[in-house]
Image (cartoon, rainbow, N blue to C red; front, side, top):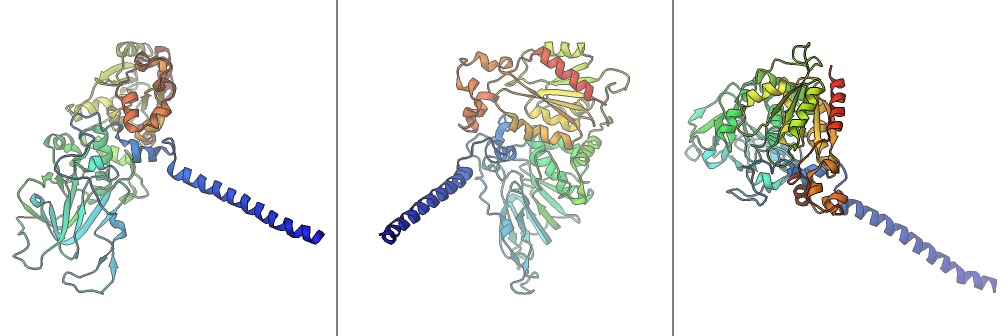
Length: 478
């Protein structure tokens, strides 16, 4: 009987083991699925901004495009060219058959694409076409460093790189010849908003062209004349030549080399390990100082003269996220030992004048928004105080201004708004989700977050907290 009993129990043990193993395997699979597809928007801050909520400042500018893509161009649908290869053809098909070379166009980051070609280059901007000798296929590209954002890219003109026809009568004739390389970029997208001007255009442009030492011709697509005038002093640091409105000048420009598209590293920043010559964002700030004639290199507790009072600049806002007790803040700062200035930059502010004002400040304070981009003009050792609106927005404010500040040699401070300081307390019942559970609002998506915490919130600063913050800022000054 005993052998018979063991023979009945053995399959039961095997069955239990299979069941336990299957349960463990199911738990592992569920964990993987949850991590991949069910993550909340409160993971890695950079990924949140890049993938879903990057529009925080782009909606502030009146001229910014609407959420629904429109206009004459469609959203970019570009296969990452980094996986493509071209066959070396030697102009007329000569060369080793099947040999592989670097692709003409390739992604330099998930936000930027670069096309680089040498030879007989003919740029026909009226047809959005660049004819290139020695290539055997077409490439399409949009020279704006925001490829991850289809709303922005819908407002960037697409250019096509085409093989130069072998027959001379089929190729467009050169009407202007250049002996230096051409570099094409766009000020479409969200340019016109100061934060995007720097993050999407100017910093990538510096990364990509400073090594030419002025011997490069800029070709600008989507040109806004007022925008070019605003930043012309900076362009003069990178090129010896006037910027060409390539879309509309009715010329065929011929170059020995063309580069299309600037390289993005990080928001408001430069990665010296990847940049030509290992330049950093400090070098970018140095170029800005030369461009706008900013003589002050370092902040001081003694102010600009070293023997006076440090200057506090309050960045004012007219729309949402404005200070409701701005005058009281200025008086409190004066009592704390600061010389106080209040300024409200906008699209029409003279860049050089405002740059000098910011450069004269030792401490700058403002609510999260595009105006804080002017931190690029602060002297070394200055303090930036970012007022973070109520609503769990620390991830957003970190990526946009906190993280770049250290590389810019600026001391950074947060002032996190409490519910009692927010105008939201007067707009919603005390038990409303907007007040009690901001992260539940975050889970509803970017539009819900933006409407609740960025578009409808103003700030009444607690003056005691503000004075304590200013004292800490004062102690940080050299």
